[in-house]
Length: 80
Image (cartoon, rainbow, N blue to C red; front, side, top):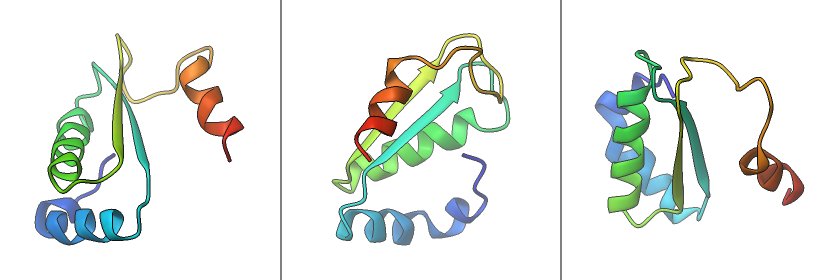
């Protein structure tokens, strides 16, 4: 996620997500120079705050979806 708000409001965002019990699943390419650091920062902060969070790093991808959606995506869609 490219979310500049997290630089100044990270604690408040994590607190709100945790209090509302919102599950967060982050997907980020290992070669995504714009978002990888922010995705890892959000994951670590939310995890530390006790939030429900998962980070899936997609090997070799930049800022894009994979050419074929794998089971990690389908699981999320099927549980809605």
